[in-house]
Image (cartoon, rainbow, N blue to C red; front, top):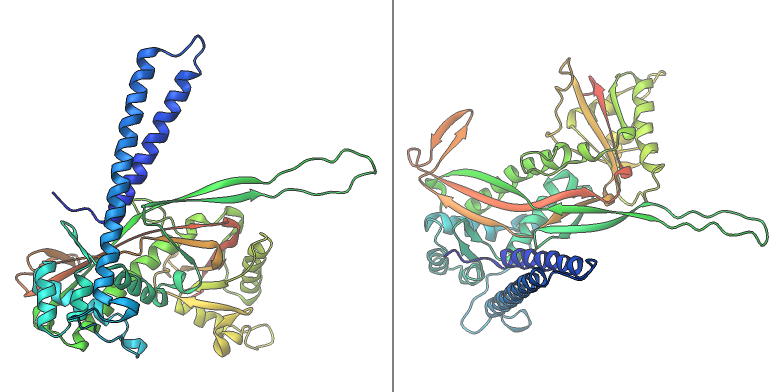
Length: 436
């Protein structure tokens, strides 16, 4: 039987709570029946509720045990007050920011050399002098899908992704979603106020509310590495770390910006943007460009969003086009782009995941403006690693055998979703020939 992680148990507990709620509603409906409830149906429903309650209590106890074990392992690995436990050498944390996440690379190498067996990987790390990292990996959960690495290591990976994924880097809020689902309440209609005559009745009003539901979407990164490179060196660990970061960041960017929510992918900013905040087929003359860009800003600002983290997302080629655009007098239209990397005072973030071959003429691209404080990323803060030397993968449209080419395939899985707190904080346009 596959051992469930603490996050899996939390999801099961949530499902049991939902089942309890559904059965309780059924009992209330029976009791409200005119002429009295059907005794047999009420007895059956009560028994069903007791069973659901028992399942919830059992799962709640399992979650508490798993959390206690996870905390105990972390304490045993780190010792009291952050000091190493007796007999355990905790590896030093690199002072150089460029070395952050090297422990993840070493962990992947150990798992690759041990063919995904966590216990063998722990032994291997200890033998190579990484006893502190071995103790940390030992707190991870092993399952059929791979090894769920300890949360601090996964959070380091997510922190490194922030600098590479433009939506994260632009200031999107990251909220924990350990149970697999998250519901946010939001106000979609404000209360009103007004003047009235003396002694006149005051017209009551109240804000209207709505909800935002987020559920996990699974992102999988697959990176092949030559077996000759799988050595316990810092350089190799950094190579593995950077490969995983690069492949996951590119896919996150594409989903968070242009995802349509199909095929179990997140719904991105483009699909969340309201129709009134979209402009299409804008020409590349200064007059058209200037009006369109200012319209994007005004649509967001007029949506009464707080403008806490406003910014732009576009291709690098679009940024260069705008940075070289000249007005009617021959002056640079937007000198701040080259001087400070800003447009109208708002920072510009670039990504290659916005196409430049859109439209019938395959010559259009997109420019996004948003208050990114309104964008929420629900994140599991978890990372599952697995490796294989026998699997095959597609490269350039052709199947490639890892075994035949003496490679190891590394797979990393993370879970997250994206939704805006208020869609009025999003706007975008498509421009014709807006890219160099």
